[in-house]
Amino acid sequence: MSMAEKHFSRGADSYASLATVQKRIAAALIQEIPDGFVRGADLGSGPGVNFAALREKAQSIIGIDISPAMTARAARTGVPAARAVTGDIENIPLPADSCDLIFSSMALHWCRLEKAFREIRRISRNGAFIALAIPVTGTLKELSEDLEKAGLPGRCMEFRNLTEINVLLDECGIAGKASSQDSNGIITQERVFQERYASIRAYLDSIRKIGASGVSAKPMPREACRRFFGILGERQTRDALIHTYSTAFVLGYLKK
Image (cartoon, rainbow, N blue to C red):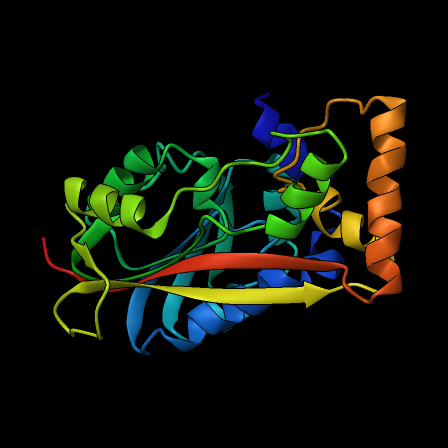
């Protein structure tokens, strides 16, 4: 079992209740999707929290997730014509040219993006609609800064920037450009989402208990841990326990 699979399996039971900002991001992304598709793929589908909304866009949805625990929960959503299978986004278990809607929200940063993008192109039909949300530089900046102040640098995941994502989209045959919507092309845009927390526990649980923590699980030295919680306590008194998610939205029709 890979490390990512272990993380997501541990987060399967609590994801739906704790992943509040992730659900807001997914809802904003789904709002950008037109109606009328036949078969959609939800890559990194987790426990199927987006199945019902995606079914309003497509006649059927297949979710792909690396965690068997996540796909087991997704199988119990009861959404008609929606199912989930365990699989790797870098090697999607779907035939070529099989989907006319490709959706993925807050999952692709766990993959080697060049592999994931090539797989997305492979399974997409000509003219398929692509809707991806990918965290970029600036995500979890508050947590990263506080860990560094406490003497714990490098504990947060490093995210790619928007320019790097555009280059990879182009290299992998999914042309990306930061511009206004073009009905015959893919555009990328950066959106910022924030979530405020009332307690240190809620602040930390929101990332460590959903699987996709993005933070090293290595034990903290006692003194550094004390400093870190002191910094968080000071943030709490200022009502400043905030997570920022700077997110690349990749949207549009793929012409092969």
